[in-house]
Image 1 (cartoon, rainbow, N blue to C red):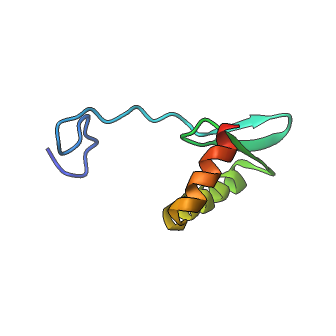
Image 2 (image 1 turned 120 degrees about the vertical axis):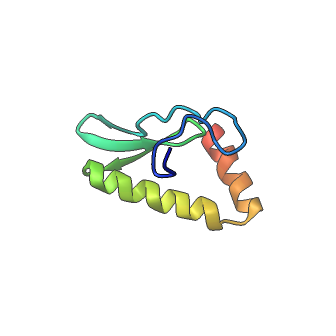
Length: 77
């Protein structure tokens, strides 16, 4: 099997979680959902929502732990 083929297990043998579409439209606007279960938006179209998700992921990757804790608390409320 080629490395380029989709695998049903990761390198440690654990099943890879099923991915769902993070993007949805509501009342004429587009949103994305976070792993924490929050909806982020509105965006003008799906492409804008995709760019918003990319920005969100970049922020989550680069943010200091204290900032991430504050964000998680805000999203949970």
